[in-house]
Amino acid sequence: MSKWFILFISVLMVISCSTDSAQQQQVDADLDVAQINANTSEYVDKTVSVTGTVNHVCRHGGKRLFVMSDDANDRFKVEAGQVGSFDVALEGSKVRVVGVVKELKVDKAYLDTWEKEVCAAEAENEAQKFASEHEGQDHAGNEQADNPTLQNINMLRQELVDSEQAHLSFYHLDAISFEEVM
Amino acid sequence: MNFNWRKWNRVLHRDLGYIFFGMTIIYALSGIALNHLRDWNPSYDISRLELQTDVFRSDDSISKEQVINFLEKYGEERNYKSHYMPQPGQLKVFIKNGNAIVDLGTGYGVIEKLQRRPVFYHVNFLHYNPRKAWTWFSDVFCVSLILIAITGLFILRGKNGISRRGAWLTALGIIIPLVFLFMYT
Image 1 (cartoon, rainbow over the protein chains, first blue to last red):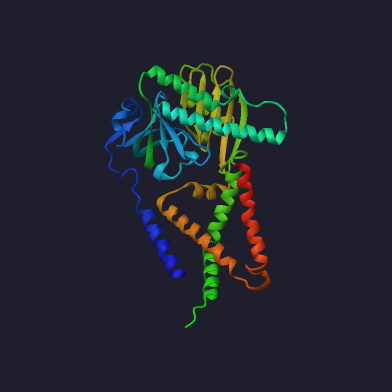
Image 2 (image 1 turned 30 degrees about the horizontal axis):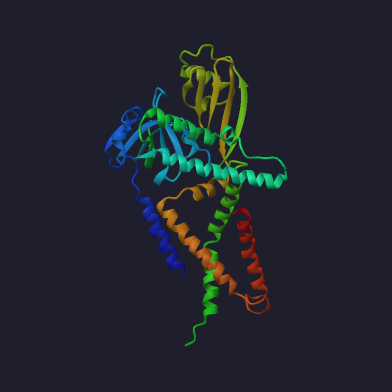
């Protein structure tokens, strides 16, 4: 059994070592943060590289980061994707990330479903809190005022109305590889 | 020829147990870490130093020299990486393994330093890091864990075996999660 296990580990190592670095990846466009922000819809589902300074890395697990332009006026979200996770130590470093641009379309149906899920979770939390505290008061009601997610949903609803479009678009880069650049 | 299934059951249980000892510890530790995600950051120990500074007299444009001068007081001058102004009147400085934010109007600031937690950072990294090869390896581990559990039921015979004491304890181990399931759904 140990022979098979060693063989299995060797195969895994070969697979993991064969991943291309950011330098080797073929890309449709080499962009900086301002350039991708200017024409994001043009690059949806295309493989591009984005170069910028890491502004923030998600503290719990490093699943996403934000890169910003040199003048700090533009930001772009990068999901770890095939990279797995980003180290917080990257904050403040200039990186070149290669990945596929993805679009999240947020329409009325999306917001309705989201709101329903948030309200259901909220109701469940309230019920548990109520049961554990044994209080005789009515806890229903003022969810919207307290819950930041519901406030966010309402904000997006307003943004959707103001845009006069069928949906709002949010973009991110699904990372394939990255490298620190000087 | 008789197939001695109990022998092969023991061999499978023993060898998979040895091979995946390390993985079991990794997933158990990261499981504890993730269970308490609301209470702590399992990957980093984050320290905050509140400060008051008068180094920055104007918020027009802050030079690298000014920032390094500011960092000197806190022994961080060698750790400078870059800086920018996220909004007028606010300075953010990136330093090695941390950052500093200063309100240029009041001079109040905070230096945040992050230090990787030994062991927990690494087990969490593996748990969160689904690269292809690792995903396959951990899938093999998960299947093996099921095999270890099933083969474990049939290791012993007699009064401590699965037909007597083992049956009660196994049932208890299944009932407990079911009770939580009914409670929470």
